[in-house]
Image (cartoon, rainbow, N blue to C red):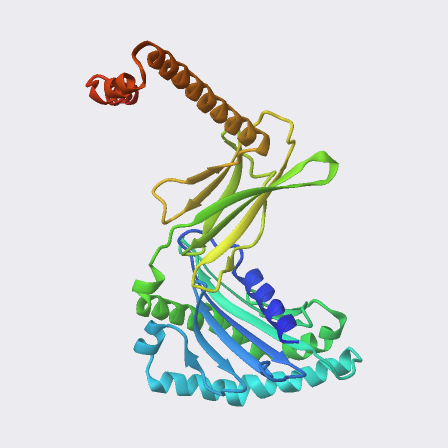
Length: 356
């Protein structure tokens, strides 16, 4: 059950973090309620992220909102953590517990593992535009979301219609959600960015590896995994003969690696019998120029290896023939002496070759 919950939370996080732009900033909160908690699976969890970096954590087992970065621990005082703890203990946690019971009844479900999720937060785009969202999910599917422009709710499931009518009728609730997303959330995002400036502005260069596997119809799927980069904004595309092929490149979401860096995957299907050259291109703010990793088909690699081996064999054969002829002419000892005393021998020849 813990593994299933962990996978669900990873997918939830990946979906919410996807779609960032270079120079943008984000504040995200994720609440998860579980109907059948157990060892290692709290009944309620809350985590907060600034620019994809985990900075706070609360769960119903520890029952304390706790910092997860040095800057949050150093810059946010004890009153802040106490206030946040009380908000979750007295508000969100019991609300999620009651919500799970209500939804199990609406879905006509018996006891078992069910989850209620909330994702909300705000963004400041590179061009200064601001945005925010507030949406609920149930058992991994969309349930209801908030439209801050109209201050109304959109039901994504029939079982959410009752909630929609109730929340639409509560205009004060809609006003408070809009005010939070457009003002309070943005203000705190700006504070967190200032508090964690040194950490949040650190940049880590991506690494990239390419691989290939057979695909349907005799094609080959090329994969490019870019990883180890921070911040999360990145562009990965396959080049065909040096030309970007964004329409043919299938990109996965950018997801956390668990070490405060990110990773992503880009694939493309190719004809392995063609002479086209494919290169993975990665663009990231940490790079002075884009990172390019070419794909070398196995057949080409084997051909290159074969040529190298052939050349080495030929060189060895020629060297052996010369040694044999010189041995026949001057004797073995004379040949060895000549090799050691010749001041215009192989070293000078090598230097010439390097210079050429």
